[in-house]
Image (cartoon, rainbow, N blue to C red; front, side, top):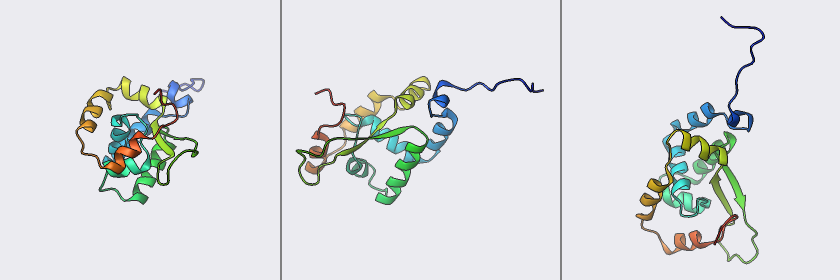
Length: 143
């Protein structure tokens, strides 16, 4: 039985642009879940597309772009850019990170625990190019 005057309840994320059901539903795809895991495990929490491609080698560049677009659309990921001044050719300036609402959602549901992902991430062999990409300053770096 429904009441005509009943107002549907909405979570704080939904009113802030992140619908928890839609957001978590977007992670039913293994590649998108792996992208989130890569972001969580990244030493600075903000990998570039080059780093995301390196850590997800079976994903084509266009597919990676499509998945990142979907994750941005549902409010899990946001893009941050740094000033290009002082960057060497080929160094990244655009990075991807979790939104605050996504981190809150994951914490409440015990998903994508940062410590576990960072431990796995640390075990991956890295090329000099990827180490150089990881060393680039990112917006919000506390160093």
